[in-house]
Image (cartoon, rainbow, N blue to C red; front, side, top):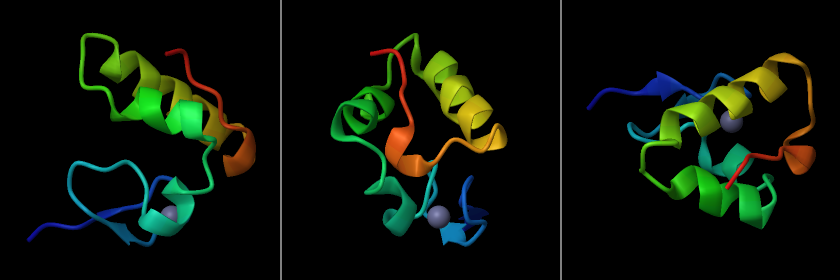
Length: 66
Ligand SMILES: [Zn+2]
């Protein structure tokens, strides 16, 4: 099974998830639900997440467009 690094803490995460469990549950509920959607905007949301992580936004303040 392939493991990829968590986008936030760089520890291994499961394939198909952006973050490890510990980091994932720090993200606000609405942002988590939005990131769980796999529609045409999924890549745009991932980019939003990525941009904020790169900018040093705390996990508890991550906001993505639903
Ligand atoms: Zn993590």
